[in-house]
Length: 226
Image (cartoon, rainbow, N blue to C red; front, top):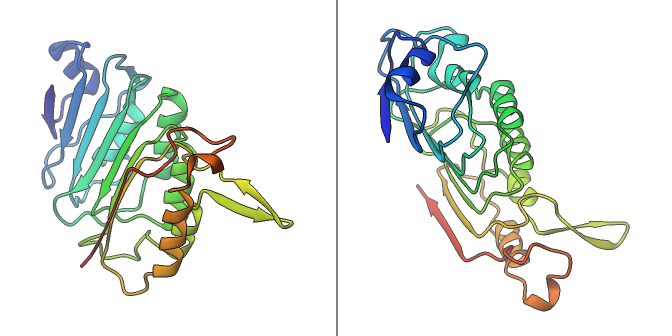
């Protein structure tokens, strides 16, 4: 594992020094230190399975912020776990286009996603999850976020295992294999009934699982309110 703090060195030079067979890679951003330089074309890291970004508020312009630079600079075809969290004052917009390009370019089969204390619109979160059909474990924590929570009724409804169209019940295509869900909610408008209905839809007996991923029954659901 290598844990790289914010530095002024080009990403390519970092990987040339620390070798390219890393499996666990982490980046931390310190307040207004020198920015990591974008690497173009992106570096391929074929063995990285876990990527962690520890972010904080910064005065850097958008293209020089850590998340933007890392997602634009790396290609991680073997990535299975992605952890993103804020450790202080991160209020920047979710880098949607850069993240989507990273996912498309890497073509990985992500199984674990954790987003903690990061401002994120519910529409951006739903769009992100549509791009991660292999996801098994999802954690979203909206604590200490000075922005609307992404954990909205629309988001909860998007996790429902089935939806109705013309009186016909169809299987949802969003994360069919999801096994564990952890949500931390700090807002005031949480739809308990909608949440229970969604969880029930993914705790179906085997006789209802025709055409669905055999893994797609919840093993664990945790909801925290602050």
